[in-house]
Amino acid sequence: MTNKEIYTKTLTFSLHRVLFEVLAWLALVALTVGGFLLLDKIGDKGLIGLLIGLVLGIVVVVVATRFISYTYKAGQIAMMTRAVTEDSLPEDVLGEGKAIVKERFATVALYFAATRIISGIFRQLGRGLTALGKSVGGDTGNQVASAIDTAIQVVVNYLCDCCLGWIFFRKDQTAVKATCEGAVLFFKHGKTLAKNLGRVFGMGLASLAIIGGVFFGIFYVIFSAMPQIFTALAAEFGELAVEEGGSATVEALKDPRTLMLICAGLAGLILWNILHSVFVRPFVLVGVLRNYMASGVNDIPTEASFALLDSKSDKFRKLRAQGV
Image 1: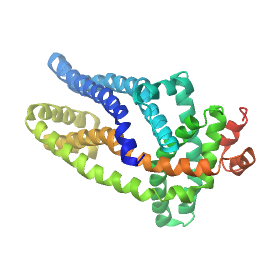
Image 2 (image 1 turned 180 degrees about the vertical axis):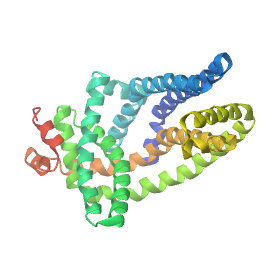
Image 3 (image 1 turned 90 degrees about the vertical axis):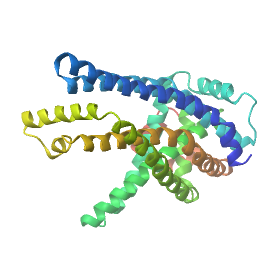
Image 4 (image 1 turned 120 degrees about the vertical axis):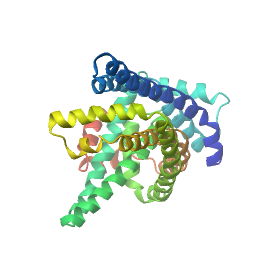
């Protein structure tokens, strides 16, 4: 199966995921705006109402993304893994994917425990690379370290998904041992996986410019049609600036047009994050996962190879102690 075929056939997971996430973000916006309007009308405490609504909205988003959409994300990774290793997919891709997730991770707690361990191992390995930049010294060294760290964070997210794919693939092994194998694969075949970096960052920047830019413009037009909201909100920040002495940030927020730009930018960024992660990122992941799985199938890590990471990651060593 080609990358495009795999992406198309597993897109159903993305569509289900985006539905729940969009509804959650809409609830966040509704609660935030509703809280502001309600308390502004009742007691001229719009900013407090906005914060209350925002907190409630964040709770809704966290619940939706943590306890609902995770099933679709993990199921998509499981089906992508089957496709790149077996060159086929079942008729009921959605149902099979969800069933595999429940079989491999009986509860949501086990799934997130595995992802935290995987992320911790890769980030700990990444910090060693970041130290190379700092060793240059001075401002240049810090800038290099910062750039390396940013790149590592992006790569780590893809590696975590690839490692989850390896856990689904190695169903004859415990999740603990499969996780250790996945970490070793990255360490042993880093050069092979690095050839995907151009695609990862290139498509990420392109989607940010296109998707983020389009939605920034759309939201700015929408917000421009309701200036009274931003005028009232700017007045709230003006009062806050007087009461607290005012910082440069608060002073800037006293301007309704600046608030519109900021809110439109945030809304565009949120929509880009959702649409990129749901539609663009899975396409990139198929290619990265294919290389990752190929490197592993051709050279399955042995327990002897685990020693390679014992001195480089405390988290890896602790994971091995759990019974690999």
